[in-house]
Image (cartoon, rainbow, N blue to C red):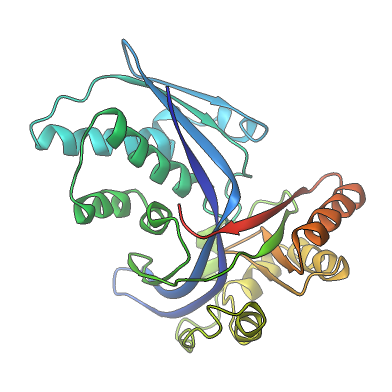
Length: 291
């Protein structure tokens, strides 16, 4: 049995800068990953299998397994291996689901990226990095950045990646109000698709300078998401009221994050918010420097 972590993806900033002729939106986003995440395990088996477990598994259990990004990642990598003359054998994969489903923190995309890396090892299949990135992009615009797994700036539809070299961790509390928000609906409700690009990052080696820079950025999807799901505003207010230095929605929502002064203050805020809002998903975590 081999196991890989699938860290949550947090869009600290997300600027929508245009729209392609095929309908895909162009973005510029500063992305980090956290200690919090799902976990994917796999072992050689007599036939392919897929199992779900973990505290957030119930939300996926009613879906067709063939549509799960973990299974799709397995099949995409298997097709690439066969094209390269390899014979990848059957595997049984278990997804330990710890992140809320469809919540704007990249759970499914992270699961797919972890599956690709895990099966490359299990099958001893080593595609070129550009080929693996192409497979990842075929699974979703967020999968290449999750495959990268370190602080980065994503551009285009998410496939153009530049390592950011963030020299410190951020202590976060992630909150989700258990309200589903449709990503296509959020983009449809976006009033402007031609917005100012992400400013050049500052303070990559200094936390206070970086947070000052971050306060001058945006998540252009937050206003339309809040119109569709006003509970997002409740989450942001709760984080600010719990002492967050900075609070924002991640991705297309509805998950929000707060940046706290230290791990201790984040843990205390997380504990307090769980008591105040027992129906919410609340987790204190920390960003990681690399996958």
